[in-house]
Image (cartoon, rainbow, N blue to C red; front, top):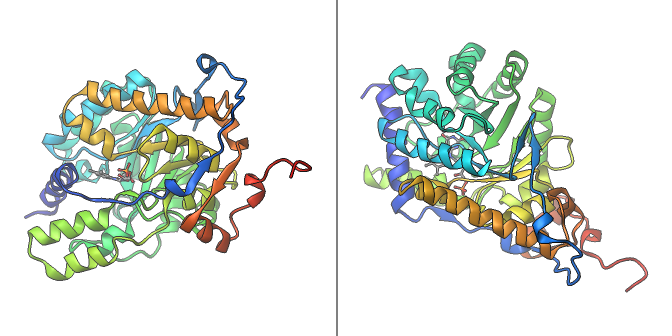
Length: 366
Ligand SMILES: Cc1cc2nc3c(=O)[nH]c(=O)nc-3n(C[C@H](O)[C@H](O)[C@H](O)COP(=O)(O)O)c2cc1C
């Protein structure tokens, strides 16, 4: 099969697998607790959620993360995601646009998102391994294709390492990210796809000129498992084995937020965000906004309305968490007492990223 057909076919296979198979890993947000405030002194109706992000304002600090496009059957799903994002005022990313660079007939499957979401924050997407092939010029076409407000470059070497057609030459990627940051007129966001970003890498990316980081941490959709299932279908024992052994590989989302925050770049929390409470915890840990994939794509297989309801439920959960912590604005969550337990606390302490004062009762009251 020619490469462009393979890419497009893989997009469809991913959608079918995530819709029907158990491909989620455990979320670590259970290790994060916001302290209840019995006297919140806030009127819930006056809680405001507007969040500035990369030059635009999100009506709510929530986005539909980069997922699809690239096969004719994905057009309808992307249209529904775009319509719901516009209605709710969320940001929205399209999936990797490599398929449209390989086959221009597929441009429509991405452009439909901008058509359905003319005013909200829309971001394009390409994998870091593809930057070498398409260069800054290719990336400009990607941005124009969806009139993007920003470009997401995704890092997915875990997935590349466990899939048979994977790109395993990871040399020169940082330099390419730097070139793209210099050569584009829109901001560049770098995102992981399920294995998280460490502080070391966050610092490298900041040095290269990226405008924001999406942690794409471990938890939620797990591409090692997705690839293991694809390998199982092909009876490829070795690839299936690799996918299963590395299914727990990566930096859990709450830890990756701690790794990336405090560097002067906005941080997006992604990977296993399943409720507005997870969004609240992410913001309390240092994120500017959060994004989710699987809950939205599953809803989009039914209708725009289902996507909208999924998002509105998360927004109401976020408002409730804000009310119960006495937070009028998302940024107030950063001051709420926060407790970290279990594995996440152990890992954060070993990394020197957890300040226990965040959990302490006020001085002089103990
Ligand atoms: C069907 C599907 C396709 C995806 N395709 C892409 C992609 O093309 N580019 C990308 O950066 N991430 C892609 N992702 C990863 C998501 O952006 C996100 O990191 C991941 O789904 C974790 O979020 P979740 O647990 O809320 O689903 C995809 C996810 C899903 C479910």
